[in-house]
Image (cartoon, rainbow, N blue to C red; front, top):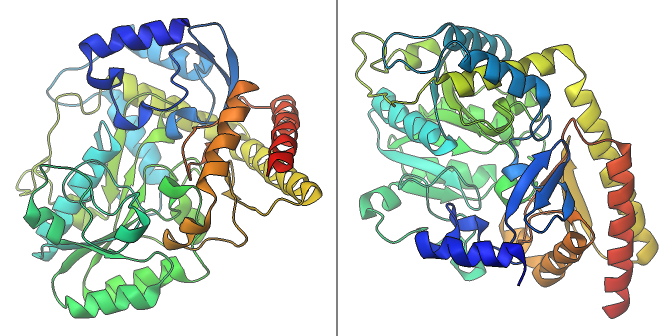
Amino acid sequence: MSNSAKLHEEAQKYTPGGVHTSIRNVDPFLVFTKAEGAYIYDADGNKYIDYQAAFGPFILGHNHPYVNGKVIEALGRTDLYGVGCTDLEVELARKITTHVPSAEQVLFCNSGSEATYHAIRLSRAVTGRTKLIKFQGCYHGWHDYVARNMLSAWDKIGTRDPGSAGMMDEAIDNTLVCTYNDLDDVERTLKANKGEVAALIVEPIPHNIGCIMPQPGFLQGLRDLCDAHGTLLIFDEVITGFRHNIGGFQKVAGVTPDLTTMGKAMANGFPIAAVAGKKPYMSRFNTQPGGDVWFAGTYNGHAVGTAASIATIEMMENEPVHEHIFRLGERMRTEIRGILDRLGIEAFVAGFGSVWTTYFMSFEPRNYTDLQYNDAQFYVTYRKKLIEKGIFKMPMNIKRNHISYSHTDKEVDITLEAVEAVLTEMSRGK
């Protein structure tokens, strides 16, 4: 029995399933013991080029020395107080409001789910309305407000599809589901619920389902519809924020939401998240004297997360982080397309910047419904065979891959060689 298998067996004695987030329980099950730069290592000493990146936080690479050094330096003098604020909180807030277009003010919390919860609660307070619009396939956290119609079974698309037992009916039914890249659907929904929709929340690029790009005019169309109907526009940039631009994908798209949630790449793997937005809205939080929207959290603004985030953003300010990861991302996508063409495999290589995935289907998907045409069995088998060759991509259907600043052309070369070998083998079998 492998060391990973032994540790998994041991873990299950103390933890249901042996993992602390549901989506981590995958086949093959690996226990990881070390991470450095572009590489991760399992309990049996196997080394992998990592493109999972813990679902995206590691934009600089694992255990990045500059970020880790700044965290260690901070912990040498400070930690958490539960009163007042720290100099690190002030500096990080200044940086975020400088770079992110919608961020006139910002508040820190600890996870993306917390951030979206606060943004939605605030939008309901501001508008006096209860309903919310989200998109089929998008993920915005584990709470009742948004945990519906995520990775729905194909026959559940657009139907009432709560993601968990124990959810409140009121929360489920006050969240309306639309089709991404379909402005007509959004307009119909707003008109059918006239004066009732507090906010529309959207991943500007739905990375929960790989990489579905917004069609030209879609994000601006959402901005216009929200303005026309008195609905707040929330960009959930927990994944896209800082990974695609230091100002978030909103900077790339030129569309400014009312509220923004951020996390993951903002601190290169350390736990911190944020909700930001226009000052008149943010001042409703009761961190401002007289505010009436509750905002609290013992660990909000901890020195570990704030120091890591300052260091990560400093790297983006002072080094060609995005130039490097965008170049490698474009090379990866281009050369995988060449391999697919040579082998005559029907596929669409999707991506933006440092993110990509290969859908095994004949056209570009524009929404979750389109993804039913992806060959899921081929997709997952392909990823499992790459893991056997030391290339780690999440072995699940329609999941994205990430390139970090620690990846180089060497890692891309090794990856492309493995991709070609695996696809050649699979094309013969097919």
